[in-house]
Each structure stands twice: as structure tokens, then as C-alpha cells.
Image 1 (cartoon, rainbow, N blue to C red):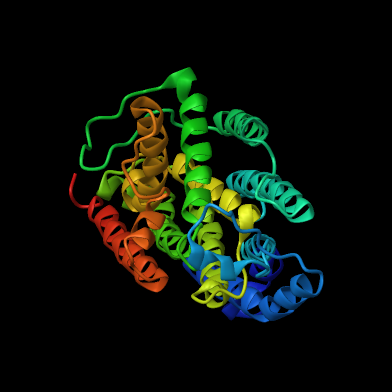
Image 2: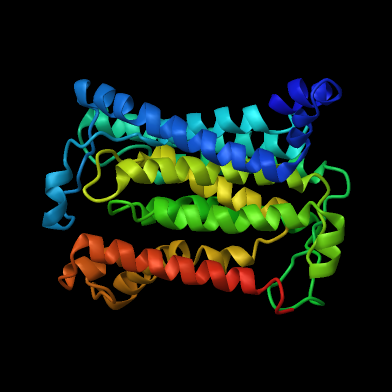
Length: 359
């Protein structure tokens, strides 16, 4: 919005020319999103507390989590509002890619909101059925994927970190691959969101890494120099990533141990979908395995645990899945688990950035 109102006025006041620059508008989106969450957070928490819209805790979970029962949840609504508001304020509104990301993100947020509300209203841990959630997620991605394929010059080749000359073309199967990436990332973030600040920390790191990759992918000269795919229009995705990072930082202020609010499925499903779709748009899908390694690890731990449990007739690989609960069962305190997972996420983020030169 600022871009369309203020850039035309640069002939009147030359200072408005800064709104042309993606870097300036990205910083603006980060700061705006952060302060929106910081300002509205206490009011949101109090609103949810007064209406007794609190977290439902599984009876089979760690005993240390029982004290979290009743803590306000659905904080993802606050995150989504900050992302949407700051993005629309700072982005070039003619960007089809940004509108697509916002649409898919809000769709997944809607799925999570329905799931959260059903859990709260029934006062148990059962929301939407797994099949129902997967069906709705698939529908949203298929629509988004078809719209993405309709973008001019959209590339269906895959880009592999460290391998500059290996770019297989998925052609018509690309939508199915995008479905796997986006739905998989969405549910992986959802599984990670089990401790105070655990999911939102790696989300900040991942969105920060993709912020840089989006900017580079949208710049023809830099993309050619670094030998990464050039994606016309991807520069505006940088502003969205800034809003995502800023709102996540703001939410971490209230979600850090001991958490005053939880994001709920409305937050975790939408944030994961946003990261997955950004990865697809800027052609860095495989890189998500590295930079989002914490999410991948958490999802794999559940798959391994369930698979081995069924195959072995009741035996377990981990003391409890997802993986973060395994360490709790071993006696680690919650803040130690969270901070160490953050450290791993930062190292993985730096590794992802290193792939820019190691090709």
C-alpha cells in the first residue's frame, strides 16, 4: 500500500524514493509485524483468558505439561493478522506470488482454527479428523499449485544444494511434489509445536534464510552470479518473509518459557504452509530439508516411532515422539530442550546459506 501511495510522490519529496527498494520495505515489514504482535499480544491474551479459551493437554503427555492446561491458545490468529497487515502495507500489491502465498497461508490458518475450536469447545485433544485435515490441506495446495503453474515462466525443475548442474524436470508431476512439500512442512511444524517457543524459534531462522534467498532469486544479476534459479517477481516475496519473521519474533516474546500463549494449530499449520510455499516459489524446495531440519527431524521421529511400533508389535525407538518429548523423558528440562533445538536450527540455517557458494 505504501508502495502505491508514496512512490508516485517521489517527485514532490525525493525521500519517498526509498519505498521503491525491496530491502527498505522488507525491513519495514519486519518492524511493523513485530510491533503489531507486541502491542496486541497482551490484549489478545487477556481476551482469550477471559473467555477461557485455553490449551487442552493430552493425558498421555509428559506430566510437566499438565500445568499448561488452560493457557490461552490460538495465538496463531495474532500472527496471521500481523503477517497479512504488514505484508499488505509494504508489498507491491500487483505481485501475484504474494497474493498466492497469503491465500494459501490463510487457508491453512482456517483449517487450524476450526481444529483448535473443536478441541476447545469439546475440552479434549480431538479436533478435526486426520483425514479431514489432510483433505482440506490437499485442496488448498492443489488450487494454489495450479495457479502457480499458470505464472509466466514458472520453472518445474528442481534445484539441489551443492549440485549446480543437477536440475531434473518434474513437468506435470510438479504439483504433486509441491503438495508433498507444503503439506509435509505444515504438519512438521505442527508436530514441532509441543514446547514453549520450540516451533516459533526455528520458524524465525527459516523465514530469515528464505528472506535472503527470495531477494537473490528475484534479482537476475545476483541469481546468475550465485547460480541459483532466477524467479521473476520473487523479490516481493522477500517482504512477505520479512513479515513472517517479524511476527514470529513478536510472538516469541510471549511464547518463550513459561509461555503466556500458544499458537495452536491455526498458527503451526499456516506457518508451515507459508514456509513450504515460499520454498516452492523460489525453487529452493530441497533446501528446506536443511534449513528446516528441526521440523524434518520431528516429523521423522513420529513416522519412525509409529512404523516401528506397528512392525515390532509394540516396541518403541524413542521414549516418546515427537522427538522433543524423548529428551523430556530422559530428564532434560523444557528450556534446555528448546534452546538446544534453537542452536541446531541456527547451525542448519548457516549451512543452508553456505550452499550459496558451495556449488
